[in-house]
Every structure is written in structure tokens, then in C-alpha cells.
Length: 209
Image (cartoon, rainbow, N blue to C red; front, side):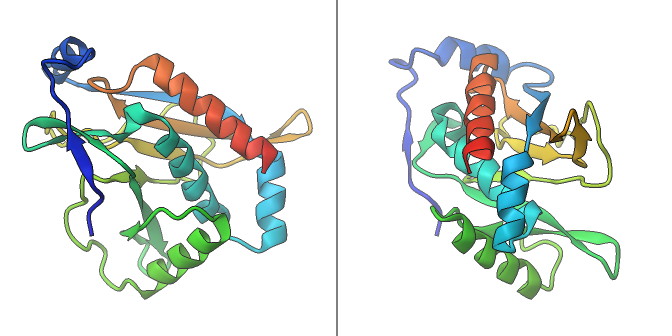
């Protein structure tokens, strides 16, 4: 079942002009990569016996849900604000070397989410279950490369406002375990200040886990 949303009255919406300007851009999305300390988070995940990848999906999507700007979407040409955003992530089939896209509802508890996500990914036999809904965050981990920049394919659909999150291979730096994380968002709804809020929220969760 899709999550509920409210249609925004753009005539009374303070961001309406900014939204319109960026919506008509040739490339309305922008991407930012940053470095995060996962020393404490990785240790906790290991002690709990959880999948690091699925735990990262949870952490990223939990923090993004806390930032209102990341929950805006275009619905039938109108601006909508969702009450909650669920998760979608790529999951590698090691036998074929191909990935499947798995959809999992966002849950409050990390362990419950990871257990449900692992079960769903294992039981899903097809690569794609259909077009992704508006009410998901897309996560596409790339644990083979420690990158400093990443770009994505462009569908050409300017109203596709689904944020996309990536992270690469973690590495040791000054005795800490670091990881590159990227976030791509639609500029009609998300500015640099919102990226900053997300980064601080995520770094706090990863450190205080």
C-alpha cells in the first residue's frame, strides 16, 4: 500500500518560485559526495550479526525521512508531501552478476528492518518487480570502489524527484573507518542546506549507534 501524501497549494507555498525555476532546468538533480565515520556503526552492526549494507540502507533512509525536503515529490504534475518514504535498494545476485531492485517498507527498528529486508531480498526471484513508486528512497551501494565522485543515469523525466543514495568501499583513515556517501536530489525541493541537515543527521546516527 502506498504511503499517504498531501497536495501542496503552490499559490501559498513559499518555495513555489524556486521549485518552478529548478523544475525547468536541463538537469534538475544535483549530487553531493561526502565522507562519514562508520567506526562505531560498523562495530555495532557486526556485534548484532546484521548485514552492513542493509543496515546502511536503514540508516540513510531513516535520516532522510527526518528531513521534510526529501519527502516532496511530483504527483500528476502537482507538488506533494509524503508522510513517510519507504526503501528500495539494489541487491546483487552473485550467481549471475546481475542486481535486482528490492522494495522494503521503512520500519522504526534497525534489527527488524534488516531481518525483513534480508528475507525479502532472498525470496524475490525477479530482477524488477515493476516501476518504483514515488514513495521510496533509492539506495545503490557500490562496495567495490572507494570513490570521491559518482554520477547517475538520467531518465530524462524532469519530474522524477526520487532521491538516490550511494556509498562506496570503506577504508581506514587515522585509525577510524571511513566511507564515501553520495546523495542525489531534485533541486526543486532540496537545496544545499537540506543536504547539510541530512549529513549532520546521518553522521550523528552513525556515531551514536
